Figure 1 (cartoon, rainbow, N blue to C red):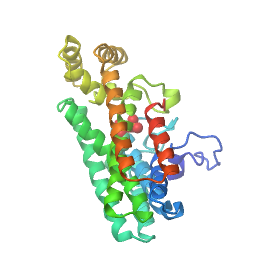
Figure 2 (cartoon, rainbow, N blue to C red):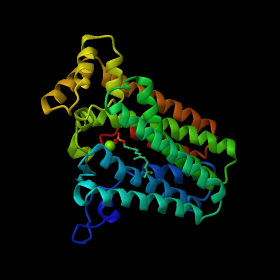
Figure 3 (cartoon, rainbow, N blue to C red):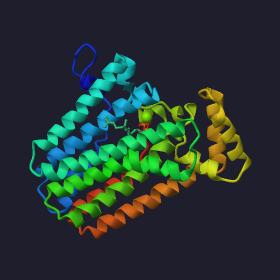
Figure 4 (cartoon, rainbow, N blue to C red):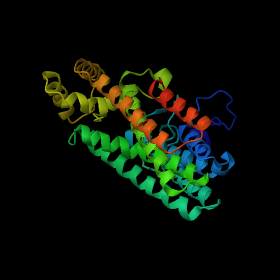
Length: 304
Ligand code: FPP
Ligand code: MG
């Protein structure tokens, strides 16, 4: 089942050679954070694997919760194989992640970091589902969701990589802050792509967030504007059923008109700057710093 989710093979068990794969942002961060503190990248293989496994576990559960049928251009596992398959495959990947860390040195330092991040991830996701009903619509809430469901694991990836590289706690915390802000910037862009991206690029259904009346960052920014469009958007969100295709188009236009997209992209750039500030404060090795900076800039200019 996990192989189906990762796109390793077809339903019939045939190996898939061309497939849309994960961007592997989290493992890349773990490996580079390790290098940034002059560690041997090999030491960060366990943490890199663990954060990617947790990420995929969370996506399996998230698609089920969101009832989104498409992931990486393929059917989400719940849609292909049913809810129990997605639920249990997610559980299995989560336990495999913990196992990966218990098998390597520093487990007493790394496992608690991973478990704390997952706790925040779960809280962020739950808050997201509450906001879906439109009852908790505020920019602060949307930011808490972004920091929880995305910032926590990117922060964890960086901290675990730094620990594997032998960093002292203060240095590992600096890299953790780098990941935290990068995660918020990442989610800002993700929310923008959910509204204005192309499904062919993102591999996910476009406008699904609007359809289910999720208060993502561009929506929260638009609602915070004191405008007739904000009122109209709130009225749309007060409906007690999913929005239809025309209502989604209309909602997106309202958000655009009051600058919800631009405000969110500005926020993404601001958090990337914060991230790069903390990276610099960590006294990183130059080559790793250059790669982390390139990765950060790539993440806010991506189309998928
Ligand atoms: C995607 O958000 C969701 C997440 C990044 C986190 C989901 C977290 C959980 C389900 C809790 C943790 C669970 C386990 C098993 C570790 P999104 O819906 O905005 O993004 P999308 O458009 O890619 O679906
Ligand atoms: Mg989702």
